Image (tube, rainbow over all chains, first blue to last red):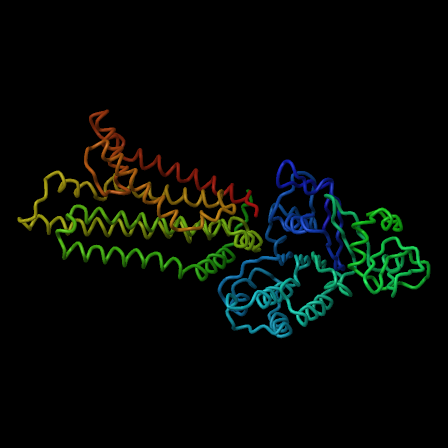
Length: 280
Length: 268
C-alpha cells in the first residue's frame, strides 16, 4: 500500500533527516513506528500524507503520489497528528461539516466510538480537555473508514481507561484492506495491538519485523535477584532484578516486551537484527 | 497544475469556511461600521472638531483599518500549522480549497470595500449640496472641486482596481509567508502596516500637490495623476482612459495565478 524508495529529506542543509530510506507498508497490518525523539517519525508520516515533499526518492501510496494531493488519495487517508486543528464546534457539528468529504464515513460508527470514549457529541470541542478533544477527533478518524490511517502519538493526553478503549477499537478495525500506522514513544500503549514493529534511527529504518517473527526469534526474560542464567543479547538491570532479551532456543513463542525490545534495538542493533534473516 | 473542480464539493468547502469564519468577518465589518458611525456622528455635531473635508476623507482611514483586520485574518489562517494541515488534508481538490478561501476573503472584502466607496461617493454628493447651501461654512473652491473628482469615472475604477490588487497581494503574501512567525498573527502589526500605507499615500500626495490630505486609498491615485499631469500637461487616463485600469487588472490576474501556483507548492 505504501512504498517508500530511496527517500532523502532534510529540513536544513546541515542536518539530513532521512537518507536512502526504504520502507514498504502493506494492507491488513497495524504498524508501530518507533524511534527516539527527533528521528523523524512525524516527518515520515507527513511525507506519506503529502504535507511535506521529499528532496529525493519516491513515495507511492496505492499508486498515487502524495505530493499531488489528489482527491481520491485524500479520501482514503486520515492523519491523526499529535497536534491538530478542530474548530469551535461540537463533535456532532464537526461530523456535519467534514463527513461529506469521506465517502465511507459511517455516522452510526462515529456515535458508537464517541460513546465508547465517553465523549458528549453536543459539547463544544474547544471547551473539552485535550484528551477529550483527541478522543472526539480519533472517533471521527476511525468512522471515516479510510484505507490508510496514520496516527502520531494517539494516546498522548489520554487517561488509562481511554488508552484501553483505544486499543480495543483499533484492534476491531484491523481488516484485510486497511493499513494502520501508529507512531509513538509510549511503546507500552501498543502492546497486544501492533503486529509489525518499525524502528527509525540514524536517518533510516533499522528494524522492520512482525511481532510473530520477533516472538519466535527472541525470548524476553525477567528474573529476580542479580544472577541471570541466560546469555542476553541485551539486558536491563534494576534494583530488585532484571530483564533481558535472548535468542529464543525453544519452539515456544515468547511474549514480546516492546519497551525492552526497543531499547535493545537502539543499543544492540547488530546483535538483535542479526537473528532475523529477512531483509529490512 | 491540478485542474480538478467539483462544484458541489467546492460549495461544501465554501459553506464550511463561511460557517467557521462568519462571526469573525461580521465582527470586522460591524467594528468598522460602528467606528465610522461614531466618528461621523461626532464630526456632524461637533463641527469645530474636524473640517467637513477631513470628515469625508476619514472614511478611508476606516477602510485601512478593515484592510488591517483582513491582513491579520489571512496571516492567522496560513501561519497556523494545524489549520494549514487541516486544509491540505481535506479531501477536496486544491482548486476547490483555493477558490473557497479566496472567495471568502479577497472577493468578499472587495465587495464590502466597493460598497463602502460607492456609499461614500453618494453621501459625498449629498454632503456637497448640503455644504454648498450653507453659506457660513468656509470651503475653498479647490476643496469643493476635489469632491467632484471622486465620481464613477476612470479614477474611481482605477482606485477600485487598486483595492483589488492590494487585496490579492494580501492573499499571495498569506499563501507564501505562512511559516510560524508569531508577530504576523498579531492584528496590531497589520494595523500599523495599514496605517503606514495610509501615511505613505498622504506623504506622496503632499509631495506632488503640496496639500496634506486624508485621502488614503485615493491619495496614491491622485498623486500619480498629478505627477503625470505635471509631466505631460494632461492626465494619462485622459489619453488612454482605460489604460491604467486594464493594467491593474492584468497585474491582479497575474497575482492570482502566482497565488494559485504557490498554493500547490504549499507544505506545513
